[in-house]
Every structure is written in C-alpha cells, then in structure tokens.
Length: 255
Ligand code: F6R
Image 1: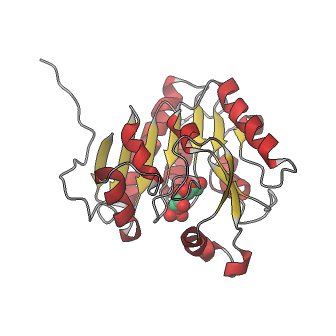
Image 2 (image 1 turned 90 degrees about the vertical axis):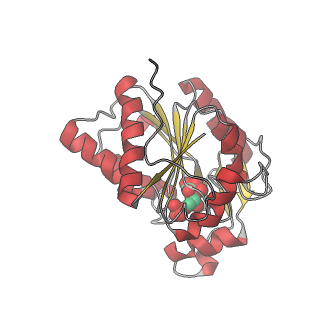
C-alpha cells in the first residue's frame, strides 16, 4: 500500500484522474469501479477535462458504481444514478449500456445483488476501484462491523453516515436508512485500488486506515492487505499520521 500526501485537494484529484486515465489509455475496454460523494468530484472534473481537451476516450469503458440508496429512483437528485450522470457520464462519450449502478428500486434486492456481482465477473473484473472514505472509516457503505469478506448486499446506514450525508437532503428524515453496496470482498477483488481523502474531518479515519490494526470496526483498514493500493490524501486529511509519507509515488531505479 502506497500513501501519497499532496498539498491540496486539486492535486489529489489530478493524481487520481491521471491514474484512471492511464488505465483507460492502456486498456480502452477498462472496467472502472466508481464512487460518489464530495471527494471524487475533482477527479471527475479532471477526467472530463482530459476527455474534452486531450481526447480521453470512454467509448469502450465499462463502469460499476459502489453503491446506491435503497428507495431513491434514478431521477431523484440525491440518488447516485443522478449524481454520476450529472457529474461525469453526461460530459464524456460513455455508452450508457456500459454503465452499472446498483438499483435502489429493485423489487428483489438479494437477487439484484447476486446479478450485480455476476456482471462484474462477466465483464472481467474491476481493473481499478476508486474509493472515498467515511469519517467512521467506511468504504462504499460497508459500515463499521461489516464482514471483511462481504459481497454486494443491502446494509443499514450508520447513524454517523446518515448525519454526514444529511447535508445533501432537506432534513434527517429524508436521509435513506438503507443502501445497496458492493462488499469489502468485492472491492478487494479489484486489480488496483485508489482511495482518496481530503479535509480535517477525515484525519482520524485516515490515521487508523494507514497506521492502525486491520479491523472490521474500521473497514478501510483492509486496504492494507491489497497488493496494489494507493491512498492519496491532502495535508489536512494526513495531519494525524505519525510517519513520513512522500508527495509522489516511489519509483524504484535499478542500476
Ligand atoms: C460513495 C461511497 C462512500 C463515500 C464516503 C465519503 O459512493 O462509497 O463511501 O466515499 O461516504 O463521502 P464524501 O466523499 O462525501 O466525504
């Protein structure tokens, strides 16, 4: 696991976008795992710029999103379907047939979750998974206490997560109580992980994730076991780390 600390959120976003763009350039039919929330907005902005100004081609790219609130329709402004189309997909040349986002309105949720897992496998597995982190250490909506081997399923949202996300809704009562989420096992099967965090509100979660023991009570700590994971954060999110970390990936120079 590599930890990279950038000065600013903009630099974190550019780093993540470049990593994802690199995967797409090397493999036009790349299978991307995507996230929502505030954190990846800068990354999506930069990916859109790379598409518009440098011709980054999404025409064959396949995407799978991490999660979706149960009960929100695709056109609900707080649904993750709406978020992804507004903030990325409608600005690039992606084929809508290649976009996969959990369906929060599915009648048979367990059946849908099995189908979603099968689609990831059928597509060839995730080449890179983009992750944010909750202030409680969740990844996707795998809340503290989630099984570290879990697969896509429905989860009850933590009270802390509902409070953190209440800023997007008119009041607490409107914040959904359940979400469909990829499991921790699903995420760990991705060939590469990039976890982003910015701001002081993530400093505790990042310290535990990078320097703490692996525990289901801080689900992001599992990333320590991934063979190809990068954690890229800004100064504020890294403020509680006790070791030194570089600003650029380490490059091994063999003489
Ligand atoms: C969203 C997701 C969540 C967020 C996390 C951080 O798809 O999987 O785990 O990454 O809640 O959210 P923000 O970025 O809004 O702080």
